[in-house]
Image 1 (cartoon, rainbow, N blue to C red):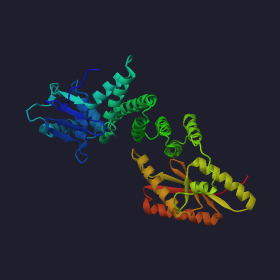
Image 2 (cartoon, rainbow, N blue to C red; image 1 turned 45 degrees about the vertical axis):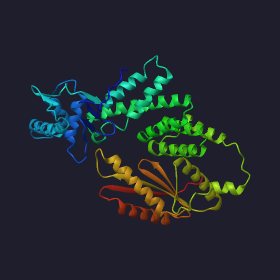
Image 3 (cartoon, one colour; image 1 turned 30 degrees about the vertical axis):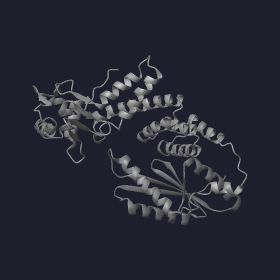
Image 4 (cartoon, one colour; image 1 turned 60 degrees about the vertical axis):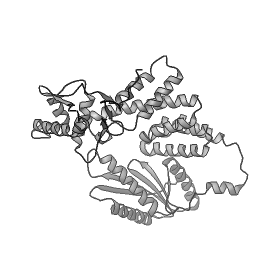
Length: 404
């Protein structure tokens, strides 16, 4: 692969789009600000990405003023480019015009040398897949690539349709590169670096099970079995809560590896009890994943059949009264608030679990139907003190535990 020149020398315009939008030239820096008009930055990014061609006015209008969003989009476009030229002026004190207008179209000045991070990223990705590279060369290439990916493509513009497709492509390439790099690091026994790279990628793609597998494998290889078990349990809970899926055989097999790694036998029952005890005397209900909740349910059903006690369960469902792109984020926040209400309002003997993305199931031992209903009504009231009933609706059903 051709060696890259230093973008910080001469009059090259250095452009970063991964993790944020930033331009620098001749010692001057221009960084995207969320307080400024985002459409101006959006058009600038589009112009730079398509700098190999002239962009017709109609294409820009259809992209940035869809469905007659503006009464006079042609005039709005001219005003935007006037502001855009003013925005770029501090970067070009030598009088160079970075944006050209030509016969009903706009174009980036091809005489302005640009060094764009996503171009280097894509070049590194293609190079990493070339046949004939030695393991060392491939690892060096993947190391540069993963270091270059500082975050999602144009995060402040993530709602734009043209940004979404490119962002998805870059993200998928990054995740694929991380997995390939982690595999090579594992072969070389560099488990610390393998953990660092996999964990960084997992923060950007929390629901990718393969990344969780890599993290657990790296922790096991470093003999950090406690951390490996903790991450395994977190990953299983996350995947079930968000996707409703159980861990794959590949992930479950790592649990057996963790258990097999414990070579010593504990004979002191007091030590075992100490390990079983909750780390802190935490008040409130017991929160667990649904798989564990199901086992508790079955155990309590057996006890109730033997003792004749009354146990009730409740299912609480959150719905949003609005529609649009922000509904999922609003529901996620509402479910976090509901979890806090549940764990904080219920007794230590009560059990709470996430049943679906918008539902919690609760077990209330030693409670008859009237008491259980009254408890749930208090939860609903507490929820509405944090979440407006005009925005969210919390419904519930209470039912006695079935004894077979």
